[in-house]
Amino acid sequence: DAGITQSPRYKITETGRQVTLMCHQTWSHSYMFWYRQDLGHGLRLIYYSAAADITDKGEVPDGYVVSRSKTENFPLTLESATRSQTSVYFCASRRGVNTGELFFGEGSRLTVL
Amino acid sequence: AQKVTQAQTEISVVEKEDVTLDCVYETRDTTYYLFWYKQPPSGELVFLIRRNSFDEQNEISGRYSWNFQKSTSSFNFTITASQVVDSAVYFCALSADSGNTPLVFGKGTRLSVIA
Image 1 (cartoon, rainbow over the protein chains, first blue to last red):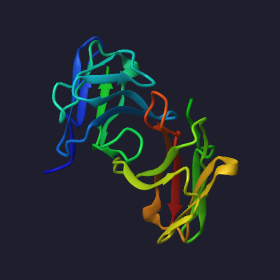
Image 2: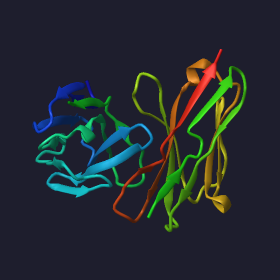
Image 3: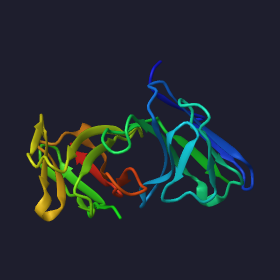
Image 4: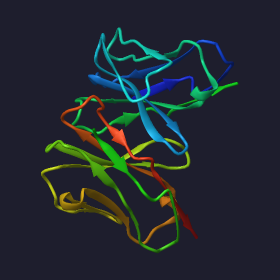
């Protein structure tokens, strides 16, 4: 089906482990984003990408790594997970950087024990 | 820097009441875009509206209406005759032509509509 999909939807891991959250979109949108949602903080931008091989930091990038070798994929990696990274992660895409609305995936709930 | 403030953390209303969700933004850019998103209990984020900074006309879509006032840097959202299905977290967001953060969200307002 067309759209933006995230996997896994739910993940439990332990402190210090590496975790990768996957994001795939079928619209060929140039821009892709990763946000985390935490109670009391709303949605905060982690990283975004303007095109394949172009990424940039957002508001809260520490502890995260991204890559974008293909336009349709934008994985987010926690190289050594910490409890403070327990959150719901949303991937999003849009055609342009500022003008269009974001299309969000369904979210990935990550728990770090 | 861009900033969005949603001062109302939680609002509770009785069904059929009207309710207004406040959104105040800050930006130095003259060209910018404002958005509202809805997050129902199921968790997905649903786009509701986009408004650019040069269009100050209010907009109405069914029971939803938006009041954009540049003079007070506000983009308020009103639900008329609220229904239980309107219960959700509502986010206001800002996107400007400059800056490193493409879309900045407020912290959200949780609306509970009681039958």
